[in-house]
Length: 285
Image 1: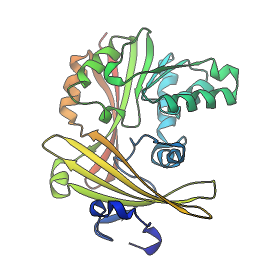
Image 2: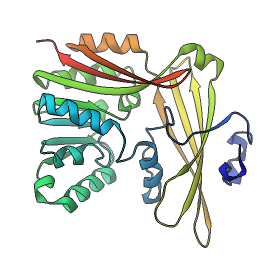
Image 3: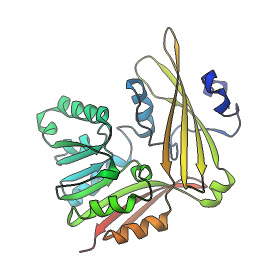
């Protein structure tokens, strides 16, 4: 591991830090499975956007799908609007759902800065996905950014049924997730990633992310050790996110039980053990 990729980690968390140089991967493009962290404060927005930022390639794929389905669009786990605002800019009415009030405030502020026409096409709804109750009818629903991994498996069937029951005839649910090969998880249940966070405010930020998989519970925990160095000082921050490992066969059965069938499946290989999967599901008319 090059010295430049080794940020100063918080000494008080040293007992949980990865051993220096042990199994550390440095990647400039893709950080598999690390995309669900929520910004804990204003400074953490940069880390959040580097993991799944406003210029992510999936925006183009989802916009292309929206052009074929039409709107309205339901954006579940919308965050700060990386999908909702571009969709509104392209003329789609969007209902953006998220449990983070500060993220929805950023979304609304972004839409207003673009103009009243865009802001008028976006409606925000603050709620946890496990408590989702919908009133409208949608042509397209999105669980983008691996948001499905943030929903407990025991609550996922209820969420899928709720979404499916509010899709218009011929409507679609699109979702993506990181798929891990089981032998790979057994062989390497702990993974460490080091990367620089792109920032444009004069602060240098480096992160070591420790990813730990728990196979008995089919869950994973990611801990981010960040060092942010400005002109006068260095700030050290630790953020943690918990997610669920998706069983593709179980997910397919839940979609079928909700009245949806998988119409399209797109795979993108991340490494020899991991791939990103995008599913497009249609209502059973």
